[in-house]
Image (cartoon, rainbow over all chains, first blue to last red; front, side):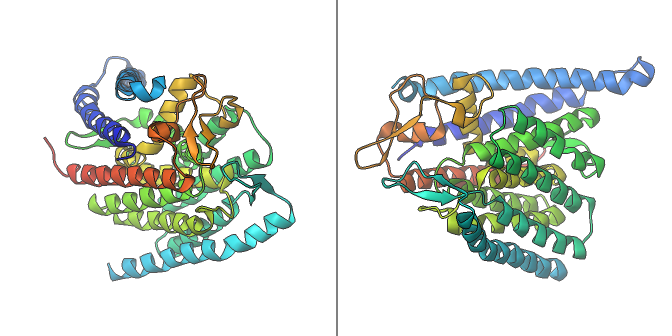
Length: 77
Length: 331
């Protein structure tokens, strides 16, 4: 089937998105920072943003590695 | 419920008929003004009119304003405003070639009506199986990112005759089905025009194209898709339905390693055979794209490549629908 590896890559991306939820929801949802007074929500959001960005960067790196692994032959042509 | 069904039929018909009827007039107008570009994938010199964005926008506005007349809501106003602003950004780029960073920044500004109208409330991100996370301030940043990403993702897949409009037809109908599954009927209703506008435009955009959507058309479709995902709280599902286009952008960016316009790339990822089929380039400096990967197993016609992309879109749409069922399950 034409592009069968791409179907597989889409499926892997989907699995990684679902797995990403397993990391994001328990980690970020339970973070609640106090002790900064009126800045509580800003600090709380900044920490959540930092973790979210870190997770996205890790996700992109994994996707990049998987891309190179799946499409190694096509890309090197 | 019967009211909503009747309105759904009415706005779908308005969206489809408006684009179906206005596009031929737009083609004549653009031909008279000599607003045409070369179709590089044709054996003989073929000039195609561009941009088709105006007829797409007219279809969206006619149907969404009608819907607003029946069921006024901030969500519909956000869809109308952000989509219109994204159209203007695309039109500016159609008229004058602008820098690679212009579109993402201007599209980020286009997202502001969603925030100003409060159409994104409640600010949470829903994940399948694991529930949702409340991220009030972070979500505002996400809104500003989603519109440029979705707009440019659709724009980047507008590479062959009929692909952008055909792909959007599949993705947006899948999104409507997903919104019904998660029981967000109001936004499902508001999303219907996107599918019907794309379908009507596909009639003129398919091989051989009579008109190209241009940046104004592609960004309008992508931005509207993005707003619907935000106001419908189906961001993750929407991203899944868009995965083939996301892969295209991801492959392109990871091979060129910077934000750049496709037209600025010197080495072409796809070349032509003697019988004018599309063939993956052997040039190692050429960017890796979805079309180049599809062609890695051998040359194909433009129409065949388009159908492979549509099959990928249908596969992603099926995954999005499965995901929306998974939203109801909590582990």
